[in-house]
Image (cartoon, rainbow, N blue to C red; front, side, top):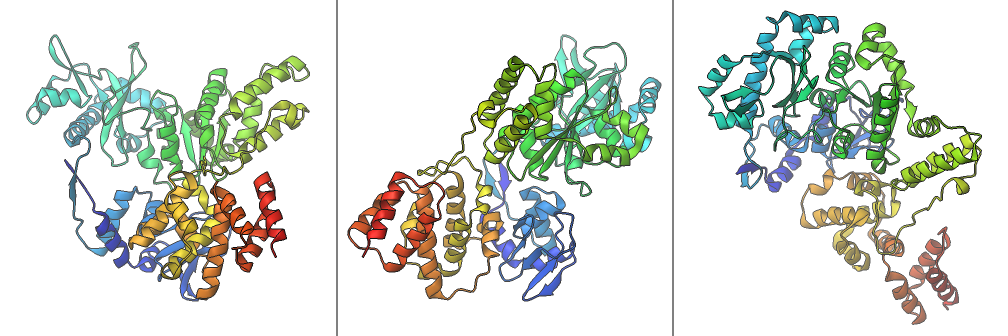
Length: 578
Protein backbone atom coordinates (compact mmCIF):
# COMPACT_ATOMS: atom_id res chain seq x y z
CA UNK A 1 0.00 0.00 0.00
CA UNK A 2 1.16 3.54 -0.73
CA UNK A 3 -0.29 6.92 0.06
CA UNK A 4 -2.12 9.34 -2.24
CA UNK A 5 -3.25 12.92 -1.64
CA UNK A 6 -7.05 13.36 -1.32
CA UNK A 7 -8.63 15.53 -4.01
CA UNK A 8 -10.58 17.45 -1.36
CA UNK A 9 -7.33 18.53 0.28
CA UNK A 10 -5.90 19.71 -3.06
CA UNK A 11 -9.05 21.78 -3.71
CA UNK A 12 -8.80 23.43 -0.27
CA UNK A 13 -5.07 24.00 -0.73
CA UNK A 14 -5.66 25.83 -4.02
CA UNK A 15 -8.47 27.86 -2.45
CA UNK A 16 -6.34 29.00 0.52
CA UNK A 17 -3.33 29.90 -1.63
CA UNK A 18 -2.49 33.51 -2.51
CA UNK A 19 -1.85 33.06 -6.23
CA UNK A 20 -0.62 36.64 -6.63
CA UNK A 21 1.81 36.34 -3.72
CA UNK A 22 3.14 32.98 -4.88
CA UNK A 23 3.59 33.89 -8.56
CA UNK A 24 4.92 37.28 -7.45
CA UNK A 25 7.89 35.61 -5.76
CA UNK A 26 9.04 34.42 -9.21
CA UNK A 27 7.63 37.10 -11.54
CA UNK A 28 7.55 40.92 -11.28
CA UNK A 29 3.78 41.58 -11.16
CA UNK A 30 2.18 45.03 -11.55
CA UNK A 31 -1.44 45.70 -10.57
CA UNK A 32 -3.76 46.85 -13.37
CA UNK A 33 -7.59 46.96 -13.44
CA UNK A 34 -8.12 44.36 -10.73
CA UNK A 35 -5.57 41.97 -12.22
CA UNK A 36 -1.79 41.66 -12.05
CA UNK A 37 0.33 41.73 -15.17
CA UNK A 38 3.91 41.16 -16.28
CA UNK A 39 6.04 39.85 -19.12
CA UNK A 40 5.39 36.15 -19.58
CA UNK A 41 7.97 33.92 -17.87
CA UNK A 42 7.23 31.10 -20.32
CA UNK A 43 8.18 32.66 -23.65
CA UNK A 44 10.82 35.07 -24.91
CA UNK A 45 10.94 37.74 -27.55
CA UNK A 46 8.86 40.67 -26.35
CA UNK A 47 8.62 43.19 -23.56
CA UNK A 48 4.86 43.56 -23.46
CA UNK A 49 2.75 42.46 -20.50
CA UNK A 50 0.90 39.49 -21.99
CA UNK A 51 0.92 37.56 -18.70
CA UNK A 52 -2.08 38.15 -16.41
CA UNK A 53 -2.97 36.85 -12.93
CA UNK A 54 -6.54 37.05 -11.64
CA UNK A 55 -6.74 36.82 -7.81
CA UNK A 56 -10.55 36.64 -7.95
CA UNK A 57 -10.56 33.59 -10.21
CA UNK A 58 -7.30 32.09 -8.91
CA UNK A 59 -5.81 31.63 -12.37
CA UNK A 60 -3.10 33.00 -14.64
CA UNK A 61 -2.91 33.23 -18.43
CA UNK A 62 -0.62 34.49 -21.19
CA UNK A 63 -2.46 35.90 -24.18
CA UNK A 64 0.45 35.19 -26.52
CA UNK A 65 1.68 31.67 -25.75
CA UNK A 66 -1.59 30.49 -24.11
CA UNK A 67 0.10 29.12 -21.00
CA UNK A 68 -2.38 29.20 -18.15
CA UNK A 69 -3.88 27.43 -15.18
CA UNK A 70 -4.05 27.64 -11.41
CA UNK A 71 -1.30 28.00 -8.82
CA UNK A 72 -0.36 24.30 -9.06
CA UNK A 73 -0.06 24.56 -12.85
CA UNK A 74 2.27 27.54 -12.41
CA UNK A 75 4.55 25.72 -9.97
CA UNK A 76 4.67 22.67 -12.25
CA UNK A 77 5.64 24.74 -15.28
CA UNK A 78 7.93 27.30 -13.65
CA UNK A 79 9.78 24.95 -11.29
CA UNK A 80 9.67 21.89 -13.60
CA UNK A 81 7.76 19.78 -11.07
CA UNK A 82 5.30 16.96 -11.57
CA UNK A 83 1.81 17.28 -10.11
CA UNK A 84 2.54 15.66 -6.74
CA UNK A 85 5.76 17.64 -6.33
CA UNK A 86 3.85 20.87 -7.03
CA UNK A 87 1.19 19.99 -4.44
CA UNK A 88 3.93 19.27 -1.90
CA UNK A 89 5.61 22.59 -2.71
CA UNK A 90 2.31 24.47 -2.33
CA UNK A 91 1.63 22.78 1.01
CA UNK A 92 5.10 23.80 2.16
CA UNK A 93 4.44 27.43 1.12
CA UNK A 94 1.17 27.42 3.07
CA UNK A 95 2.74 25.63 6.08
CA UNK A 96 0.19 22.81 6.07
CA UNK A 97 0.68 19.08 6.41
CA UNK A 98 -0.52 16.85 3.59
CA UNK A 99 -2.95 14.09 4.62
CA UNK A 100 -2.40 10.80 2.84
CA UNK A 101 -4.89 8.05 2.08
CA UNK A 102 -3.88 4.45 1.47
CA UNK A 103 -4.15 3.29 -2.13
CA UNK A 104 -3.24 0.08 -3.89
CA UNK A 105 -0.30 0.92 -6.13
CA UNK A 106 2.96 -0.62 -7.26
CA UNK A 107 5.54 -2.22 -4.99
CA UNK A 108 7.68 -0.21 -2.59
CA UNK A 109 11.03 0.23 -4.33
CA UNK A 110 12.66 2.38 -1.66
CA UNK A 111 15.01 -0.43 -0.52
CA UNK A 112 16.28 -0.93 -4.07
CA UNK A 113 16.88 2.80 -4.47
CA UNK A 114 18.76 2.82 -1.17
CA UNK A 115 20.96 -0.08 -2.28
CA UNK A 116 21.72 1.52 -5.63
CA UNK A 117 22.57 4.87 -4.05
CA UNK A 118 25.00 3.16 -1.65
CA UNK A 119 26.55 1.27 -4.57
CA UNK A 120 26.85 4.48 -6.62
CA UNK A 121 28.60 6.25 -3.75
CA UNK A 122 31.02 3.35 -3.28
CA UNK A 123 31.82 3.23 -6.99
CA UNK A 124 32.43 6.99 -6.93
CA UNK A 125 34.87 6.58 -4.04
CA UNK A 126 36.71 3.81 -5.96
CA UNK A 127 37.25 5.97 -9.06
CA UNK A 128 40.15 8.04 -7.71
CA UNK A 129 42.10 4.83 -7.04
CA UNK A 130 41.72 3.56 -10.61
CA UNK A 131 44.38 5.38 -12.73
CA UNK A 132 43.30 3.94 -16.10
CA UNK A 133 39.72 5.15 -15.66
CA UNK A 134 40.80 8.55 -14.36
CA UNK A 135 43.14 8.93 -17.34
CA UNK A 136 40.39 7.96 -19.77
CA UNK A 137 37.98 10.53 -18.32
CA UNK A 138 40.66 13.24 -18.27
CA UNK A 139 41.39 12.58 -21.94
CA UNK A 140 37.69 13.07 -22.62
CA UNK A 141 37.96 16.48 -20.93
CA UNK A 142 36.00 15.59 -17.79
CA UNK A 143 36.73 17.54 -14.59
CA UNK A 144 36.61 16.17 -11.06
CA UNK A 145 33.73 18.52 -10.26
CA UNK A 146 31.67 17.11 -13.13
CA UNK A 147 32.44 13.53 -12.08
CA UNK A 148 31.14 14.38 -8.61
CA UNK A 149 28.06 16.14 -9.99
CA UNK A 150 27.08 13.05 -12.03
CA UNK A 151 28.44 10.61 -9.42
CA UNK A 152 30.60 8.88 -12.04
CA UNK A 153 32.44 5.94 -10.52
CA UNK A 154 34.35 2.74 -11.14
CA UNK A 155 33.20 -0.85 -10.53
CA UNK A 156 36.26 -3.04 -9.79
CA UNK A 157 36.53 -6.72 -10.68
CA UNK A 158 36.36 -7.79 -7.04
CA UNK A 159 33.68 -6.26 -4.82
CA UNK A 160 33.55 -8.69 -1.90
CA UNK A 161 33.98 -5.92 0.69
CA UNK A 162 31.08 -3.95 -0.79
CA UNK A 163 28.86 -7.04 -0.83
CA UNK A 164 29.64 -7.85 2.81
CA UNK A 165 28.96 -4.25 3.79
CA UNK A 166 25.56 -4.31 2.06
CA UNK A 167 24.69 -7.69 3.61
CA UNK A 168 24.80 -6.04 7.02
CA UNK A 169 21.56 -4.28 6.11
CA UNK A 170 20.03 -6.13 3.13
CA UNK A 171 19.47 -9.78 2.27
CA UNK A 172 20.73 -11.30 -0.99
CA UNK A 173 17.28 -11.29 -2.61
CA UNK A 174 17.03 -7.51 -2.25
CA UNK A 175 20.57 -7.05 -3.57
CA UNK A 176 19.75 -9.12 -6.66
CA UNK A 177 16.44 -7.35 -7.29
CA UNK A 178 18.17 -3.97 -7.06
CA UNK A 179 19.83 -4.78 -10.39
CA UNK A 180 23.34 -4.14 -9.08
CA UNK A 181 24.09 -7.81 -8.38
CA UNK A 182 23.44 -11.27 -9.77
CA UNK A 183 23.69 -14.80 -8.43
CA UNK A 184 25.79 -17.60 -9.94
CA UNK A 185 27.24 -20.95 -8.93
CA UNK A 186 29.69 -19.23 -6.60
CA UNK A 187 27.12 -17.00 -4.99
CA UNK A 188 26.53 -13.27 -5.32
CA UNK A 189 28.48 -11.30 -7.94
CA UNK A 190 28.43 -7.65 -9.08
CA UNK A 191 26.62 -6.95 -12.35
CA UNK A 192 29.20 -4.29 -13.31
CA UNK A 193 32.88 -5.25 -13.18
CA UNK A 194 35.93 -3.37 -14.44
CA UNK A 195 33.74 -0.61 -15.86
CA UNK A 196 33.34 3.13 -15.45
CA UNK A 197 29.85 3.58 -14.03
CA UNK A 198 27.21 6.21 -14.76
CA UNK A 199 24.32 6.16 -12.25
CA UNK A 200 20.91 6.70 -13.86
CA UNK A 201 18.57 8.88 -11.82
CA UNK A 202 14.81 9.25 -12.08
CA UNK A 203 13.11 12.63 -11.64
CA UNK A 204 12.98 12.12 -7.87
CA UNK A 205 16.78 11.73 -7.82
CA UNK A 206 16.61 8.00 -7.00
CA UNK A 207 19.33 5.81 -8.54
CA UNK A 208 17.27 3.37 -10.61
CA UNK A 209 20.12 1.76 -12.55
CA UNK A 210 23.59 2.16 -14.05
CA UNK A 211 25.33 2.42 -17.35
CA UNK A 212 28.80 0.93 -17.48
CA UNK A 213 31.64 1.49 -19.98
CA UNK A 214 34.40 -1.06 -20.26
CA UNK A 215 38.01 0.19 -20.05
CA UNK A 216 39.49 -2.95 -21.60
CA UNK A 217 38.41 -5.23 -24.45
CA UNK A 218 35.39 -6.43 -22.48
CA UNK A 219 32.25 -6.52 -24.61
CA UNK A 220 29.81 -4.97 -24.92
CA UNK A 221 31.55 -1.60 -24.64
CA UNK A 222 28.45 -0.14 -22.95
CA UNK A 223 26.21 -2.11 -20.61
CA UNK A 224 23.01 -1.05 -18.83
CA UNK A 225 21.32 -2.50 -15.75
CA UNK A 226 18.74 -5.20 -16.36
CA UNK A 227 15.18 -3.97 -16.61
CA UNK A 228 12.85 -4.15 -13.62
CA UNK A 229 9.56 -2.67 -12.48
CA UNK A 230 11.41 0.55 -11.55
CA UNK A 231 13.91 0.68 -14.45
CA UNK A 232 12.62 0.48 -18.02
CA UNK A 233 14.82 1.88 -20.76
CA UNK A 234 11.89 2.84 -22.98
CA UNK A 235 10.66 5.17 -20.20
CA UNK A 236 13.92 6.66 -18.90
CA UNK A 237 16.34 9.20 -20.33
CA UNK A 238 19.83 9.76 -18.99
CA UNK A 239 20.18 13.31 -17.66
CA UNK A 240 16.45 14.09 -17.64
CA UNK A 241 16.54 14.74 -13.88
CA UNK A 242 18.82 17.71 -14.60
CA UNK A 243 17.57 18.77 -18.04
CA UNK A 244 13.97 19.30 -16.93
CA UNK A 245 15.20 22.00 -14.53
CA UNK A 246 16.87 24.03 -17.31
CA UNK A 247 15.38 27.50 -17.75
CA UNK A 248 17.89 29.01 -20.19
CA UNK A 249 16.96 27.20 -23.40
CA UNK A 250 13.53 26.61 -24.92
CA UNK A 251 14.33 23.10 -26.19
CA UNK A 252 15.59 19.69 -25.12
CA UNK A 253 18.61 18.22 -26.90
CA UNK A 254 18.42 14.45 -27.47
CA UNK A 255 21.90 12.95 -27.86
CA UNK A 256 23.29 9.45 -28.31
CA UNK A 257 25.38 8.89 -25.18
CA UNK A 258 26.18 9.54 -21.54
CA UNK A 259 29.34 11.51 -22.31
CA UNK A 260 27.45 13.83 -24.65
CA UNK A 261 25.07 14.75 -21.83
CA UNK A 262 27.86 15.07 -19.28
CA UNK A 263 30.20 17.23 -21.37
CA UNK A 264 27.38 19.48 -22.56
CA UNK A 265 26.45 20.09 -18.92
CA UNK A 266 30.08 20.74 -18.00
CA UNK A 267 30.15 23.45 -20.67
CA UNK A 268 26.90 25.12 -19.65
CA UNK A 269 24.37 23.39 -21.93
CA UNK A 270 22.05 21.87 -19.35
CA UNK A 271 19.14 20.68 -21.51
CA UNK A 272 20.66 17.45 -22.87
CA UNK A 273 19.35 13.90 -22.46
CA UNK A 274 20.26 10.52 -23.96
CA UNK A 275 18.33 7.32 -24.51
CA UNK A 276 19.71 4.24 -22.78
CA UNK A 277 20.92 2.12 -25.67
CA UNK A 278 17.43 1.77 -27.05
CA UNK A 279 15.34 3.58 -29.66
CA UNK A 280 13.74 6.90 -28.76
CA UNK A 281 10.18 6.04 -27.65
CA UNK A 282 6.81 7.73 -27.33
CA UNK A 283 7.27 7.64 -23.55
CA UNK A 284 10.45 9.67 -23.99
CA UNK A 285 8.70 12.10 -26.32
CA UNK A 286 5.72 12.74 -24.06
CA UNK A 287 7.93 13.17 -20.98
CA UNK A 288 9.95 15.84 -22.76
CA UNK A 289 6.91 17.61 -24.20
CA UNK A 290 5.46 17.97 -20.70
CA UNK A 291 8.16 20.58 -20.03
CA UNK A 292 9.10 22.13 -23.38
CA UNK A 293 7.48 22.22 -26.81
CA UNK A 294 10.68 21.89 -28.80
CA UNK A 295 13.07 18.94 -29.18
CA UNK A 296 16.30 18.88 -31.19
CA UNK A 297 17.72 15.46 -32.04
CA UNK A 298 21.51 15.44 -32.38
CA UNK A 299 22.99 12.52 -34.33
CA UNK A 300 26.21 11.65 -36.12
CA UNK A 301 26.22 12.87 -39.73
CA UNK A 302 27.05 9.41 -41.15
CA UNK A 303 24.53 6.98 -42.64
CA UNK A 304 23.94 5.30 -39.27
CA UNK A 305 23.15 8.69 -37.72
CA UNK A 306 20.74 9.58 -40.53
CA UNK A 307 18.91 6.28 -40.11
CA UNK A 308 18.72 6.75 -36.34
CA UNK A 309 17.22 10.20 -36.90
CA UNK A 310 14.71 8.77 -39.38
CA UNK A 311 13.65 6.08 -36.91
CA UNK A 312 13.14 8.73 -34.23
CA UNK A 313 11.06 10.82 -36.63
CA UNK A 314 8.82 7.89 -37.54
CA UNK A 315 8.39 7.06 -33.87
CA UNK A 316 7.05 10.47 -32.92
CA UNK A 317 5.63 12.16 -36.02
CA UNK A 318 2.03 11.29 -35.14
CA UNK A 319 2.47 13.26 -31.89
CA UNK A 320 3.67 16.48 -33.54
CA UNK A 321 1.07 19.24 -33.53
CA UNK A 322 1.10 22.93 -34.42
CA UNK A 323 2.59 23.89 -31.05
CA UNK A 324 5.15 21.07 -30.95
CA UNK A 325 8.46 21.25 -32.81
CA UNK A 326 11.17 18.73 -33.56
CA UNK A 327 14.41 19.55 -35.37
CA UNK A 328 17.54 17.65 -36.37
CA UNK A 329 21.13 18.67 -35.73
CA UNK A 330 23.97 16.94 -37.57
CA UNK A 331 27.44 18.01 -36.49
CA UNK A 332 30.47 18.00 -38.85
CA UNK A 333 31.85 14.58 -39.81
CA UNK A 334 33.77 12.93 -37.00
CA UNK A 335 32.27 15.17 -34.33
CA UNK A 336 29.77 14.38 -31.61
CA UNK A 337 28.34 16.86 -29.07
CA UNK A 338 31.01 16.27 -26.43
CA UNK A 339 33.96 16.64 -28.84
CA UNK A 340 32.42 19.63 -30.64
CA UNK A 341 31.68 21.64 -27.50
CA UNK A 342 35.16 20.94 -26.10
CA UNK A 343 36.77 22.32 -29.26
CA UNK A 344 34.38 25.17 -30.01
CA UNK A 345 32.61 26.11 -26.77
CA UNK A 346 29.01 26.70 -25.76
CA UNK A 347 28.33 29.70 -28.02
CA UNK A 348 29.34 27.92 -31.22
CA UNK A 349 27.43 24.80 -30.23
CA UNK A 350 24.24 26.80 -29.62
CA UNK A 351 24.69 28.53 -32.99
CA UNK A 352 24.69 25.09 -34.59
CA UNK A 353 21.60 24.13 -32.62
CA UNK A 354 19.83 27.33 -33.71
CA UNK A 355 20.38 26.26 -37.33
CA UNK A 356 19.18 22.68 -36.85
CA UNK A 357 17.11 21.32 -39.74
CA UNK A 358 13.38 21.83 -39.41
CA UNK A 359 11.37 18.65 -39.82
CA UNK A 360 10.37 19.35 -43.44
CA UNK A 361 13.97 20.02 -44.53
CA UNK A 362 15.27 16.91 -42.80
CA UNK A 363 12.65 14.72 -44.48
CA UNK A 364 13.66 16.03 -47.91
CA UNK A 365 17.38 15.62 -47.18
CA UNK A 366 16.80 12.05 -46.05
CA UNK A 367 14.50 11.01 -48.91
CA UNK A 368 16.72 12.42 -51.67
CA UNK A 369 19.98 10.80 -50.54
CA UNK A 370 21.35 8.43 -53.18
CA UNK A 371 18.66 9.42 -55.67
CA UNK A 372 18.67 11.28 -58.96
CA UNK A 373 16.04 14.02 -58.79
CA UNK A 374 15.88 14.08 -62.60
CA UNK A 375 14.84 10.43 -62.66
CA UNK A 376 11.06 9.74 -62.78
CA UNK A 377 11.73 6.38 -61.14
CA UNK A 378 13.53 7.97 -58.18
CA UNK A 379 10.78 10.58 -57.82
CA UNK A 380 8.25 7.74 -57.59
CA UNK A 381 10.39 6.11 -54.88
CA UNK A 382 10.47 9.39 -52.94
CA UNK A 383 6.70 9.70 -53.31
CA UNK A 384 6.21 6.17 -51.99
CA UNK A 385 8.40 6.80 -48.92
CA UNK A 386 6.66 10.12 -48.31
CA UNK A 387 3.23 8.45 -48.39
CA UNK A 388 4.40 5.90 -45.83
CA UNK A 389 5.44 8.78 -43.57
CA UNK A 390 2.41 11.05 -44.03
CA UNK A 391 -0.13 8.31 -43.33
CA UNK A 392 0.98 8.50 -39.69
CA UNK A 393 0.59 12.28 -39.41
CA UNK A 394 -2.48 13.47 -37.53
CA UNK A 395 -1.86 17.23 -37.79
CA UNK A 396 -3.19 18.49 -41.13
CA UNK A 397 -0.96 21.57 -41.10
CA UNK A 398 2.18 19.43 -40.71
CA UNK A 399 1.09 17.16 -43.54
CA UNK A 400 0.42 20.24 -45.68
CA UNK A 401 3.78 21.94 -45.03
CA UNK A 402 5.70 18.71 -45.50
CA UNK A 403 4.11 17.86 -48.84
CA UNK A 404 4.44 21.49 -49.98
CA UNK A 405 8.18 21.35 -49.26
CA UNK A 406 8.80 18.10 -51.16
CA UNK A 407 6.52 19.19 -54.01
CA UNK A 408 8.43 22.45 -54.45
CA UNK A 409 11.85 20.77 -54.32
CA UNK A 410 10.90 18.09 -56.87
CA UNK A 411 8.83 20.33 -59.13
CA UNK A 412 5.91 17.90 -58.85
CA UNK A 413 2.36 18.89 -57.93
CA UNK A 414 1.15 18.07 -54.42
CA UNK A 415 -1.74 16.07 -55.85
CA UNK A 416 0.58 13.92 -57.94
CA UNK A 417 3.09 13.49 -55.14
CA UNK A 418 0.75 12.26 -52.44
CA UNK A 419 -2.98 12.41 -51.78
CA UNK A 420 -3.65 14.83 -48.91
CA UNK A 421 -6.88 14.00 -47.15
CA UNK A 422 -8.17 16.82 -45.03
CA UNK A 423 -10.01 15.57 -41.98
CA UNK A 424 -13.20 17.49 -41.24
CA UNK A 425 -14.83 17.20 -37.81
CA UNK A 426 -16.96 14.06 -37.73
CA UNK A 427 -20.57 14.28 -36.73
CA UNK A 428 -20.13 11.68 -33.99
CA UNK A 429 -17.26 13.65 -32.43
CA UNK A 430 -14.70 10.87 -32.91
CA UNK A 431 -11.88 13.40 -32.99
CA UNK A 432 -8.19 12.58 -33.01
CA UNK A 433 -7.22 15.88 -31.43
CA UNK A 434 -5.77 15.85 -27.95
CA UNK A 435 -7.97 17.58 -25.38
CA UNK A 436 -5.44 20.40 -24.99
CA UNK A 437 -6.05 21.39 -28.61
CA UNK A 438 -9.61 22.37 -27.68
CA UNK A 439 -8.41 25.80 -26.61
CA UNK A 440 -8.38 26.95 -30.25
CA UNK A 441 -12.15 26.41 -30.66
CA UNK A 442 -13.85 29.67 -29.66
CA UNK A 443 -17.25 27.93 -29.43
CA UNK A 444 -16.03 25.79 -26.55
CA UNK A 445 -14.39 28.73 -24.80
CA UNK A 446 -17.60 30.74 -24.86
CA UNK A 447 -19.66 27.68 -23.89
CA UNK A 448 -17.48 27.11 -20.80
CA UNK A 449 -17.29 30.80 -19.88
CA UNK A 450 -21.06 31.31 -19.88
CA UNK A 451 -21.72 28.05 -18.06
CA UNK A 452 -19.14 28.92 -15.40
CA UNK A 453 -20.65 32.35 -14.75
CA UNK A 454 -24.39 31.75 -15.32
CA UNK A 455 -24.93 28.02 -14.72
CA UNK A 456 -27.81 28.50 -12.26
CA UNK A 457 -29.82 30.47 -14.83
CA UNK A 458 -29.30 28.19 -17.83
CA UNK A 459 -32.43 26.32 -18.92
CA UNK A 460 -31.24 25.23 -22.38
CA UNK A 461 -29.83 21.76 -21.69
CA UNK A 462 -29.58 20.21 -25.18
CA UNK A 463 -25.90 20.88 -25.79
CA UNK A 464 -25.06 20.31 -22.13
CA UNK A 465 -26.64 16.85 -22.20
CA UNK A 466 -24.82 16.07 -25.44
CA UNK A 467 -21.44 17.12 -23.99
CA UNK A 468 -22.03 15.25 -20.74
CA UNK A 469 -22.69 12.04 -22.68
CA UNK A 470 -19.52 12.37 -24.77
CA UNK A 471 -16.43 10.32 -23.96
CA UNK A 472 -13.79 11.18 -26.56
CA UNK A 473 -11.53 13.91 -27.87
CA UNK A 474 -12.28 17.59 -27.39
CA UNK A 475 -15.75 16.94 -26.00
CA UNK A 476 -14.34 14.78 -23.20
CA UNK A 477 -12.09 17.67 -22.16
CA UNK A 478 -15.06 20.07 -22.12
CA UNK A 479 -17.12 17.52 -20.16
CA UNK A 480 -14.40 17.26 -17.52
CA UNK A 481 -14.38 21.04 -17.03
CA UNK A 482 -18.20 21.27 -16.87
CA UNK A 483 -18.34 18.37 -14.38
CA UNK A 484 -15.82 20.04 -12.10
CA UNK A 485 -17.69 23.38 -12.20
CA UNK A 486 -21.00 21.61 -11.45
CA UNK A 487 -19.54 19.70 -8.50
CA UNK A 488 -17.96 22.77 -6.91
CA UNK A 489 -14.46 21.30 -7.28
CA UNK A 490 -11.40 23.35 -8.24
CA UNK A 491 -10.04 20.66 -10.55
CA UNK A 492 -11.17 22.60 -13.63
CA UNK A 493 -8.83 25.48 -12.74
CA UNK A 494 -5.92 23.20 -13.68
CA UNK A 495 -7.25 23.06 -17.24
CA UNK A 496 -5.77 25.35 -19.91
CA UNK A 497 -9.18 25.16 -21.61
CA UNK A 498 -10.96 26.68 -18.60
CA UNK A 499 -8.22 29.25 -18.05
CA UNK A 500 -8.43 30.52 -21.62
CA UNK A 501 -12.23 30.63 -21.40
CA UNK A 502 -12.23 32.67 -18.19
CA UNK A 503 -9.80 35.16 -19.66
CA UNK A 504 -12.51 36.18 -22.16
CA UNK A 505 -13.78 38.28 -19.23
CA UNK A 506 -16.94 39.31 -21.12
CA UNK A 507 -19.32 41.92 -19.70
CA UNK A 508 -22.63 40.17 -20.32
CA UNK A 509 -25.99 40.75 -18.73
CA UNK A 510 -27.87 37.60 -17.75
CA UNK A 511 -30.29 37.95 -20.70
CA UNK A 512 -27.44 38.44 -23.17
CA UNK A 513 -25.52 35.52 -21.68
CA UNK A 514 -28.48 33.13 -21.97
CA UNK A 515 -29.15 34.19 -25.55
CA UNK A 516 -25.49 33.76 -26.41
CA UNK A 517 -25.43 30.35 -24.71
CA UNK A 518 -28.29 29.21 -26.97
CA UNK A 519 -26.37 30.39 -30.03
CA UNK A 520 -23.06 28.78 -29.08
CA UNK A 521 -24.84 25.57 -27.98
CA UNK A 522 -26.34 25.26 -31.46
CA UNK A 523 -22.91 25.94 -32.95
CA UNK A 524 -21.34 23.13 -30.91
CA UNK A 525 -24.06 20.65 -31.80
CA UNK A 526 -23.96 21.57 -35.48
CA UNK A 527 -20.28 20.67 -35.48
CA UNK A 528 -20.34 17.52 -33.40
CA UNK A 529 -23.83 16.04 -32.87
CA UNK A 530 -24.91 13.81 -35.76
CA UNK A 531 -28.56 13.90 -34.64
CA UNK A 532 -28.80 17.67 -34.29
CA UNK A 533 -29.50 18.52 -37.94
CA UNK A 534 -32.50 16.18 -38.06
CA UNK A 535 -33.87 17.71 -34.85
CA UNK A 536 -33.50 21.24 -36.25
CA UNK A 537 -35.09 20.25 -39.57
CA UNK A 538 -38.09 18.87 -37.70
CA UNK A 539 -38.42 22.03 -35.59
CA UNK A 540 -38.11 24.19 -38.71
CA UNK A 541 -40.79 22.20 -40.53
CA UNK A 542 -43.11 22.49 -37.52
CA UNK A 543 -42.37 26.24 -37.18
CA UNK A 544 -41.19 25.74 -33.58
CA UNK A 545 -37.95 27.73 -33.76
CA UNK A 546 -37.77 31.20 -32.23
CA UNK A 547 -36.87 34.05 -34.58
CA UNK A 548 -33.51 34.59 -32.81
CA UNK A 549 -32.60 30.91 -33.00
CA UNK A 550 -33.54 30.73 -36.68
CA UNK A 551 -31.39 33.80 -37.42
CA UNK A 552 -28.42 32.41 -35.50
CA UNK A 553 -28.62 29.04 -37.24
CA UNK A 554 -28.71 30.74 -40.62
CA UNK A 555 -25.65 32.85 -39.81
CA UNK A 556 -23.69 29.86 -38.50
CA UNK A 557 -24.50 27.69 -41.50
CA UNK A 558 -23.79 30.45 -44.02
CA UNK A 559 -20.32 30.93 -42.51
CA UNK A 560 -19.46 27.24 -42.94
CA UNK A 561 -16.89 26.38 -45.63
CA UNK A 562 -18.16 22.91 -46.52
CA UNK A 563 -21.95 22.57 -46.59
CA UNK A 564 -23.31 19.02 -46.44
CA UNK A 565 -26.51 17.92 -48.16
CA UNK A 566 -28.35 17.83 -44.82
CA UNK A 567 -27.14 21.33 -43.98
CA UNK A 568 -28.37 22.57 -47.36
CA UNK A 569 -31.78 21.09 -46.57
CA UNK A 570 -31.87 22.89 -43.22
CA UNK A 571 -30.79 26.18 -44.82
CA UNK A 572 -33.65 25.88 -47.32
CA UNK A 573 -36.15 25.21 -44.53
CA UNK A 574 -34.85 28.18 -42.55
CA UNK A 575 -35.01 30.45 -45.60
CA UNK A 576 -38.61 29.39 -46.21
CA UNK A 577 -39.44 29.94 -42.54
CA UNK A 578 -42.19 32.56 -42.34
